[in-house]
Structure formats: C-alpha cells, structure tokens
Length: 148
Image (cartoon, rainbow, N blue to C red; front, side, top):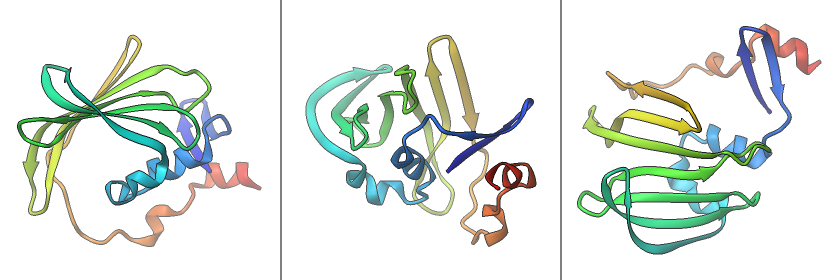
C-alpha cells in the first residue's frame, strides 16, 4: 500500500498500480529494473536536457510509457521521461545531476522532477550507508487508523 500525510491528513493511495508502488519502494531498484518492464529497448541516441544520451524506451508491466536517458559521455543516468503511474497520464521528467561520491557509488546530488507547471528539486548534501532501524518502516499512527 502507499500512503501520504499532507496538510489535510493521512490518505491511502488507491489510484496508483501496486507494482509501481513496489518499484518506488525498492531500495535496490537498479538491480531489479528489468523486472518492472514488459519491454525495454534501446531506441538510439537523443538529446535529453542538454545531454547527448542513449535512449531506452520501455513499457512497464502495468502499461505505462517509460523512457530512460543515459549520458553517452559518462554512462550516468541523466533522467527519465515517463507517464505518471496514477490515472492522470501526466508526462513527468526526472533529471539527475551533479553526481558525487560519498564513499560508495556515484550519487546524483541534484534531483529535479517536472510535471506540467510543477517543479521540485532535492539537493543531497550527504549520504550514509549505515543500516536502517526496522522502526523507520512502521506505519505512522494516522495511517494505521486508516488501515483498520
């Protein structure tokens, strides 16, 4: 299940495909990426957000269009262009920039998501590889109340 806590309160997401929710929660998504696609194929080389990129076009197992762009020069993921996983079918762009090392693999420290007139940017200043406590995955009380 997927849930949100917003100013209006807790809410269960009943609109998004369960497989999409699983994918978004998959902490090891790069290792399982092909499992989420009916089809994923190299289309060619294309421009994406000012980068010359290898373009992979895919269709998710739940029928959504999903495009991935990998920088030809660096091999790093430049971004995604995909059809929203909810019923809106909004085209969304996810752009990954400013890759840095934090003692492990390179991490995109600037992640921007664009959909229509909405834009959100996350900037990461540090990354930890410490184990996560199981308690971090417990449902908040407001969400537990909705599940009953």
